[in-house]
Length: 448
Image (cartoon, rainbow, N blue to C red; front, side, top):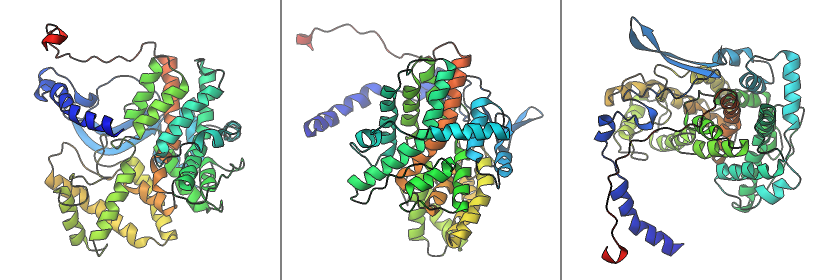
């Protein structure tokens, strides 16, 4: 390993020399880096009936920023959340909606809930033979290993009939909370020398309730805790076909690959720091702010330190205020708007009022500060990840599980897009690249 690393470091200069491309050439050839134009608008690569994101309105032929809107199968996600208050299965209701296209009636929801809970089981000895072997702090990798291994237990792995793919997707939705929590407990035991708990799911509980039950040593949780986690899962389950992991799902699906491979590929995309790790970066930034700001109610002190972060003088020296701004939304992220009300309830219940005040002050100060310091083409507002890490912290969810918890929710959206791709599309996704290669004459080895 050491010799290989030394060799790779020496040879890396050749990669820099031969793989670097002049950025001016992208404009010259009309190539949109990251499939986005200069204004951040995504290039149309497909059509979908699953969800819609709205951040702008056309007024008199002009594109004008507006408050964000997120629709699941045409239903405003904020209305879904508020309509679920006092009900147990908001995540399950959202999953039914995304998978099948309509809001379920009571009997349909109950049947789906039973089927989903039946799927919350792993093959015999799977936890011992797969999850507990080679545990890692990278729970996303642990989960991906489990997903790919599950394929070997499925005799219909390669059957692409919609009924079979739907069965696989529902089973994975049920299994994801287990492989996430069990993966963490294995790591916590073998790598951190702590106790390990393997609690079985309770088929009378919801997905959110079971997640907390399996995670906590005493299996206990409050109704408020479960409700806030349930809402967080609903808000994270889908966000359009253009996000990186969902697009990855559709790309792999278009090749004719199996469900386990497509979902494992999506997992590999989501774990990237530019995608699913946002709430973790927010928490790391907040730790740094708390260490340098003495009064959480002093807006001048907070603004002064945020300015240092923006000027690359503090925190990770990258000049970013994590949790602020979004690739699509401009004036507001609808998920953050509806979620904040429940964050406030939980903070009050957990006696975290000072922390909540700090978050709210940053939410007020940061957008104006960023607008003053940066050249931006659209508004800046907090996104859902600004508060989600704070919620997970109040729920005593370890940070190693933040991104895996994102996956527990997003597996629903991935599943819906995989099925839509199989039903609708009949071509492999194959984008074009402009080649800059020039032909060279071969040189005999002894003459090089």
